Amino acid sequence: MCFEKKQNSEIFIKTVSIKDAAELLEIYRYYVENTAITFEVEVPSLQEFSARIEKTLKKYPYLKAVSAKTGEILGYSYAGEFKNRAAYDWAVETSIYVRKDLRKQGIGRLLLENLEKILKKQNILNVYACIGCTEKEDEYLTNASVRFHEKMNYRTIGRFENCGYKFDRWYSMIWMEKILGEHKTPQKKILLFSELTLDN
Image (cartoon, rainbow, N blue to C red; front, side):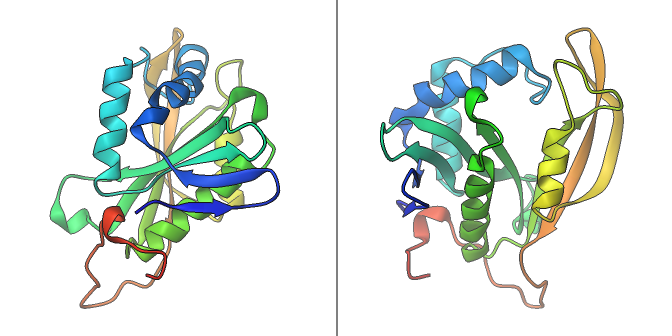
């Protein structure tokens, strides 16, 4: 499925392609090198990052926010496997990264809203976010992501204390959850992202 939707006069939300890998990696690089928002400590190679995109798109949406004026990528979001067991098929983990100079402008909200709409069409029910958090905000990590997800109607369901060590500091992690649909018996099967059409 190739998704494209104009959000306003300034932003399109589109499906990522492998050709976007270098631009997306530059957005992600900042978060790896300068923050504890991701617990990854080394920037992946372009080859590895491209492979991640390719793997994701086989089953799940991988979206980008694009400037209608310049064509530049402003941020991206994607869903991934929650656990590698068939019984978990109706659950996913999500990630969102916005270009460092464009945060707090509503781009993350647009990305997550569109991601959730597609996931719902796939019959995904449980959406999870794994988020670094801290008792004392510092230059590497604030709790802005937690507050953002709360505004998007996610709730905290678990906390792991001091489980991530980065920049010679310990950080905690929480799981946040949002339910997109009704849990039924029997449950509709999961549709691959590639199987969807705009009419689904």
